[in-house]
Image (tube, rainbow, N blue to C red):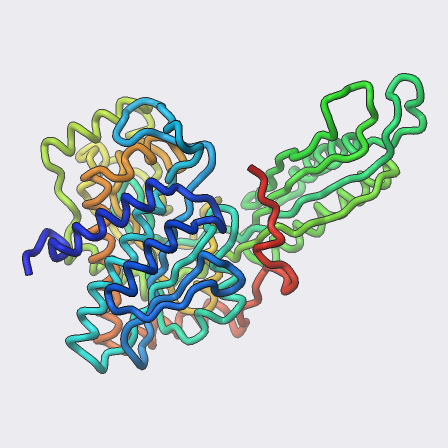
Length: 477
């Protein structure tokens, strides 16, 4: 079978086509219908047993090949972002007329590489029938939907021995440290409409309640821990007529902290402020829980295995044409952004990273593995998986150093040769990492022991209440 740098050529061609389908579909959370169908059809054709519509999500799936333990999970994502429509390969902001959405976080690549890893592991299991099972988890709605949290709540990862995933990025690195838990909820105030000039005393302003809540939360910020964050967006101001006392108003809050318990504590304080705002304005308050994710439980044992695989496989080398392509997009960001690109994983030695970038601004290097306890300010539903089974994640250089996730630049480059080489590299790294733990059971034992020690005897408790399901989510467009 003819081989490319990382995959058999026919695999690479199939994956390139699949990525193009998902990029073009650019579907939002819980509505990834075309993308999920393309992936499940592909997997069935490749001999995987596929189950769909799991954990209350129509666009979720689990594809399995092999039998017995260890069971290795490979996590796939495929949701896009609103407001990031962009023409392919165009180095200026130029939305596609047919959609308002785009893959600004590279999930088209993420999901496709997971399937690529699955193909390589399928071949390995075929050749070594007693080595275990490979499962590809189709995880919808990472962007604001917490799809993996639902899957974890329903026990879909309960028998998995280890999980691997990756994310498109500007550099090649293994994820280190942790990230934040979060909770998102909508606060709706209902008052009494009246003429704002003729009979203001009869009105009870829901908009006043929203504003007072926001003011109260802003005063809370002084008394929060440094690692905590609270964000809000006003969803409903009540109307466009200033001469009406607004009868209804709604605000969406996103609360972050370093653990589920601390996020819940902060969320309870925000709820008290909302109750106070309702009391001050004589309005009624209703609360709608939107979503939540757990903080990431790091696993240095499994991360070290993945870093070893990254080094052994070797990062992509850029051709002259690819370097010119990267430079074209790097010119769209400030020069300072290139040198000070933070990457997607926290490092203890920031000076080292700057030296690497100065030496190579095209992302051909692999960031040294530096285990640490730094908490990143973002959140991801991979955290929920990490509570249930040891999890490791890598990043590969699919986009130019200096550009950022959730940008039109990432959308524009989603089918480029640069992005595809990073995608193929990620597929191979995940597969080789999985092979290592399948061949050396002691690695799995150590990873599981580390997870148990970090949890300190606690077990996974989903941060989403049992009566909340994706269909109850607030789909603001």
